[in-house]
Amino acid sequence: MAISERAAAGQQEEFVVGGVRLPRPFRIRRLGHFGINVMDPAVTRDFYCKKLGFRISDPLDFAGRVPAEQAKSLGTSVGYFARHGTDHHSFVFFPRRYYEAMVGVKGPNENTLNQITWQVGSLREVSDGHDWFKRQGKPIRRAGRDLPGSNWHFYPPDPDGHTNELYYGIEQVGWDGLSKPQSMYKVKYMQPPALPHKSEYSEVQVAVADGIDVRTGWRVEEAEEKYDVGGVLLARPFKVTRIGPVRLFVKDMERVTSFYRDDLGLTVTEEVAYKGHRAVFLRANTEHHSIALYPMALRAELGVYPGTTLFSFGMQVADYAQLRAAIAYLREQGVTIKHLPPELFPGVDYSAFAIDPDGHAIQLYYYMEQIGWDGRPRPAGARPQIDNANWPASVPAASDTYQGEVYLGPLG
Image (cartoon, rainbow, N blue to C red; front, side):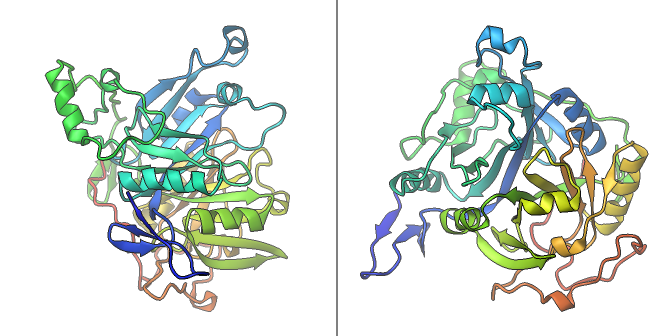
């Protein structure tokens, strides 16, 4: 387990994490996946899969988790895990009415976020992080291991009630496009395991020895591939290669900022004042921000959908040419595209927002400013001035263009 080292009186407690002293027994490495609750998952599936190119890795049926009489009025009980790369899921959408009934939501609810998920570097960090949160008296909604997906986790909420997940590992979907079959899910974990735990490779070997056909998992077929995207034929003229950042409207900027900075350990990169409103941008690694916080009062002024505290969720495409192509393609598909003031998104230059069937805004972009060893963002005056009404055919390179978390492919 992590070694807690109490320094001299008055100094911060330290933990040895992989041989490095840190102020917490874990270190978030990246935004791993994200989820929303939606009114009609079948309609949502069409939007995110057919239009944006996500692939379903597994469905999840919540049937039986609420009383039968109540369930009759809730509509579908089926939600979906979706992926843009090899992680089992990078995006999930669950049936909102059913989910709210399961967790006991009563009355109007603007929190349509299902989860914001952060990856740490080891299973030990999940276990020790879980214990650390409990010792701090911080709430944890649940812990254990998710199936489908196979990721070990625990779930702390932020002060506004948005569920965060810290996790280690996630099932990888390989060249054959198949997820693990449901028959492999033999053990349900409701808390972090005793350590050390057997490897996932060993778990698969046991399943094979038990006669389970590991090639019976979920797989989907792609639409006709007719667009040349960087020399590869794809079903759309772009490819989502990375997810995030998350943008939230929050009620208490100080308390919510403290949670992401002090409890989760994210770093404040920059603060921006926009028409008297303060926005805070925090990062997990070298990207300018992984999450951004905006005051609730700004929501009405921007004229965005008032039924959710989610300002937007980011989806990065591979390059600027793909960004332009994505916007044109989605407009042809009947998707509403919006532009918002670029001052609200430091570290991102050109971007546009695709509106999903529930009103959630998906920020499409190609570039995120990278933060170096000194921890300083680029000065505001050194950033390009963006005219949303007049995007150029091409843009000059910055020193960190195509840097950061690189998508290694293949695209399809």
